[in-house]
Amino acid sequence: TKPLSYQGTLIDEISVRFEGGRIVEAKASKGEDVLKRVLDTDEGARRLGEVALVPHSSPISKSGLLFFNTLFDENAACHIALGQCYSKCFVNGASLSQDEIAARGGNKSFIHIDWMIGSDKIDIDGVAKDGGRVPVMRKGEWA
Image 1 (spheres, one colour):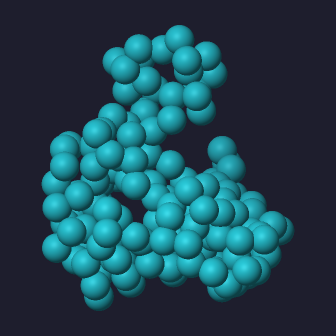
Image 2 (tube, rainbow, N blue to C red):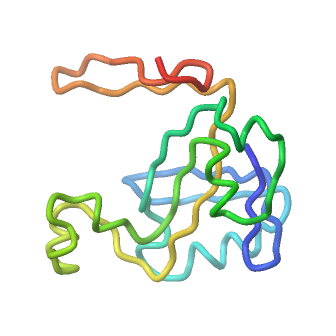
Image 3 (tube, rainbow, N blue to C red):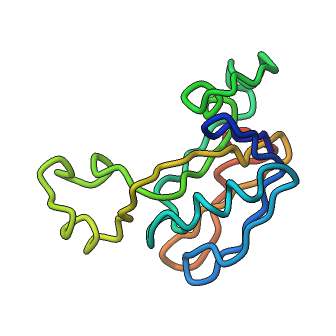
């Protein structure tokens, strides 16, 4: 929903298709060649390392500014990151080895690149153990 500024290249209108938890197709209206090179960094680069839910009404989103710096821009919208996961998201993650993190489903990669996917049109549901759906976000805001 917002462009990604990656090492001086603007990558815009990113579209990816996942199969089996891995990106198998990637497109962009601008910077597609750079996006595809990033995805070929290593085996983990085509897998998710982070999913972050950010309401559309966040202060950064309300500002309407694009900072061309992921550390700021990622606070404007829900976003995903490809590549390395954060070990701190696991219980006792700081003390886990890379193999233990991988055994718990954590992804390993040389990259961790966030891009925004959220807007005022996004609806997100959680899936309960019984398969039922639980509204988490509606129209970009917490349900």
